[in-house]
Every structure is written in C-alpha cells, then in structure tokens.
Length: 381
Picture 1 (cartoon, helix red, strand yellow):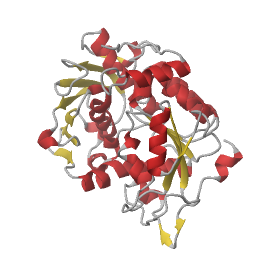
Picture 2 (cartoon, helix red, strand yellow):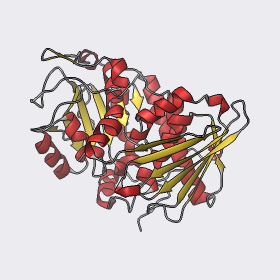
Picture 3 (cartoon, rainbow, N blue to C red):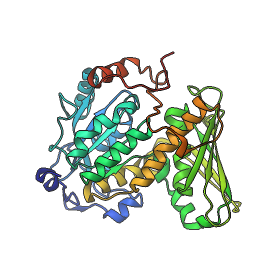
C-alpha cells in the first residue's frame, strides 16, 4: 500500500464538534451522528467509484455518499472520483453529486481511501477493473455478484492477499439486523435444515440476495448447489437448494425460494430454520425503513473496512459465496437444475454478462472494447 493511501485514512470522527460512532457501533448498523451541508471535506474518507448503468450508486448510494441539499449526511465517506465505461453517464453522475470524472478506470490509484466497483454489467470484467487497486493495496468493495467464474474470484482473492488489500463483496441482506438475531439465537451445529423466501426481479441480480442472505444466517461448509427455474431472466419461480456438510446433526439442505414481490415490496426476506419454529422476516415497505435498516448497515461496514483496513468476511467465505453464484448457473445451464458439487465446477467456466437484464448490450460492448471479450454461457437474445 502506498504511503499516500496509508496517510489518507482519515480520522473522520472529528467533524464539526459532533461525534461519529466508533467502528464497533458502525458495524452494528448504527447511524453516524453528524451532519454536513457541504459535499466535500478532508475529514471524510475519499472513495473512488467505478460506475455503470446497473449500479446502485446511480439512484441509491450516491445520495448517502454525497447528500444533496435537504438531505443529512449519514456516512463518514464521500465519493470524490468517478469513472464509467460510458463517459456521458459519468459526466451526468459527476455533475449531480459534485464529483470529479476520471478519464481512465485506473486513474484513481493513490487518490482515494477506498474503491467501489458498482456495475452489474461489469461482472465478467470486475477482476480487470479491480486489479490496479488491489495491486496498490487499496481497500475494494466489489458489488454482488463479485465475478462470474471461480478462476476470476481466486485471482482477485490472490491479489488481495499478496498486496494486503482489504476486500469485500456483499448483498445488503447479509447485514440486516435479522441476520444478527439469528446468529445470536441459533446454534449452528444443531441446524438440520432451513427454508427461505426472497423477493426478486431476476436471479442474476436480485435472486442472489436470498442465497447470500441465507449464507449470512446459516454460515458456510457447503458441498453442493442447484438452481431450477423456468426463465433466468424473469422473476418468481426459481428454487435454489444448498447442501451442507455435517456439523454434528448430519448433513442437511436449505431451500431458497425466489418469488414475486409481496405487497409491491422489492425488499423482503424470510427464513425458517429447523429445528426452530420461529420465522425470521425482513420486510421494509417505505423509503425511510429501506434506508435505515437495509442500505445503511452494509455501507457502514464498507466504511469500517476502508477506515480500519480489516476484513468483514474471510477470503474463504468470499470465495464460497462467489462459488454459490457460479455453481447455481452451472447447475441450471449444464446439469438441467440437478445438484452439482462446488468441487466439480470447472474453474474457468464463466456465467457471462447479464444480457437481457438491464438493456446492457451497449455497456458490455464498451467493456469488451477496453479489455477484450469475456466468454460466458449467457448470450444475447
């Protein structure tokens, strides 16, 4: 890690005489207790953003990092640099939030305290976007689903280890309070099975919320996975089955149901764990609840990683989570929805880019022109 990057890890708790919460409180999902009217301050962690049309920063995270007039500041981070394969999109984003636009995707090295890669359309290229930042030792958050093959996941984790670059990937469902309640009450060596339900729009983007949410609640030690559904590109009807190793009560399985959005809510997750009878449910219906209880907890943990340089999840957990994503598609596209052991998946087998999900063709073409074409099983319709 460069000396510039080390020195720029701001002690952002000293802001305007008010106090921010310490890392422990932040990792528990609490709000930062200060507000700022200005979108720029040397006291805030400087974050660079690699942005795409499929990124949350466009309409959601941007207002947390760079609150506009009338909005309070709830994070100790601020976007200071942005790059996009779509130069026009980067310009619009930069103008809206007062952020400098970078000409090159690796142009933020040594200029930021952390980097965020936030574009569903870039999944097949995340390993190339992340490389210069990991090699510089810069903390990196790579939005779900991390990458599209086991080989690429291992490549990023190898670089993170080699250059001591903190790395994180996640679904917001992994960080909701219900997951911590489950972990506190459930003895993991006594689990004999579970069933979860998740509202989703398609498996590639939102179906993974349920799978990674269940992973956060239940933990690792996974042997196999399967995905059966009528159409990968449409909502409802998908079923993911996950097979676990023996934890003391014998091997067990979990079932994640991908369903329609109940009561017009796109943020709904429930899980029942055997032998318990309690059903843990997260359902956030209004914008305030979504902000406070779903979006902010994960962002606070990203902030902790950028500030402290720690790992929220181990490299092994990140690889297992990523393998679940790839394995589900391998099951569906190569094995007709049958169970497949994670150890059976060829490391260079790639899911591909999410054609058909976000009208993504033009953006994916931009990445192909920059880095070369990435092969994958999902093809344009």
